[in-house]
Amino acid sequence: MEEFVYAGDATLSRPGSNAELSAWVDYVYFRDNPAGPHSELWYHAAACRQFLKVERDTRTHVISSAELA
Amino acid sequence: MTRHFSIAALLAQAARGQKGWAPQWRTPAPKAEYDALIVGGGGHGLACAYYLARRYGLTNIAVIEKGLVGSGNVGRNTTIIRSNYLLPGNIPFYETSLKLWEGLEQDINYNAMISQRGVLNLFHSDGQRDAAVRRGNAMLLHGIDAQLLSREEVRARAPFLDFDTARFPIMGGLLQQRGGTVRHDAVAWGYARAADKLGVDILQHCELTGLRIENGAVIGAETSRGFIRARKIGLSVAGNSSRVAAMAGLRLPIESHVLTAFVSEGIKPLIDCVITFGAGHFYISQSDKGGLVFGASVDGYNSYAQRGNLPCMEETCEEAMALMPSIGRLRMLRSWGGVMDMTMDGSPIIDRTPVDGLYLNGGWCIGGFKATPAAGLCLAHLMAKDEPHPVATAYRLDRFATGQLLDETGGGTNMALH
Image (tube, rainbow over all chains, first blue to last red; front, side):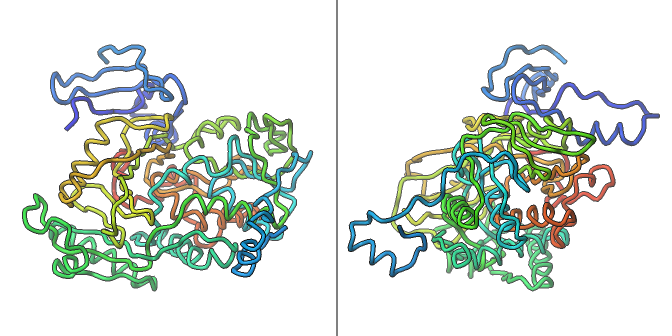
């Protein structure tokens, strides 16, 4: 088990309960998938169990910031 | 200059010091306009160009490639071919691909070292055995070879696996004898040479920088070597599909992830087929040079870097040791990462896009190499006829909205599970 577990794109926001189906399709399946700075969630599974919001460059793996989500 | 490869040509060249071979393909300048343009000079794009010219009669076409042909994922895989799928939308496609592999070398006059040495999927529990039986039966119903091996039959074939002390004891395996391996670079070179022979322009160091769209239809491509007019453009740029589709204002159900593969130092013949470890996700075979070629899962986070990280390497080696401890003293020679288009259901997309004349072949997840001939054929069919090839009708872009997902592993939107 890894200490940190990837939890995906942090820019997605869950649609409201009355949202159109298309909003849910976008939320569940579609991604910007940038080559460059990416805002993403990591779960600190092996310790404090907090979610972190991390800015990481997907071309170099360099992390520019991390904060509690 | 000799253009056709044969034993006679080889002997004739041997007598002349091998000096009479022609370059395998031309280096033409881009024309102002083509009937169709394929973006991406990898295995899939070059196969598409070949089949467009050979089977659909379109010869005024070009492939544009930002680097050298074959420098992407066709050269960054573990070279495995097979058609041992379960779902109805997948089986006919991958069997079409395997049949094309079987005739490929004669078809394109190129030695791709296709070796049908067998693909053996091990199972380690009752549930996995039942799943293997079901998969094998699905294959047999589609006329594909499948063979269930008992523990003792697996042992007779691969005595070096851990049968005595394994944490996950081997119960048996599902064998597809027609599966195997291919010399991956030769696939790109062979298709490039065969397509070029039919008049296809292969434009290397020609990077797509934009797509020109008028009234909802594509009219051409902006490239690093100027504007090229074409009313049909096929995208075959797996790993970078999202970036290229964004040039047409499209957003895809894809994340890019890195998958790492490894090769050990060369040893004498040990593994005579492809073996996969069912208690994890690990596959291993031996190249003709003697190196053990193996890999596991994607690293699990978005990445466009063609290199993975150490946790993945550790996991892969742990799985190797769980399967065959005898290779524990081998030294790792190299590892390489490829950028995968991971779709949200683990299956690919070969479809029209909302932009007229713009076609997408992508989303190959970690299994694009084996699909090379059929993906090329089906993209060619789609571009030539504007309708899907009969074996690729399930690979629709809109399936994520309609619920017609094609999820072989049941992994959902978790990329590390595909």
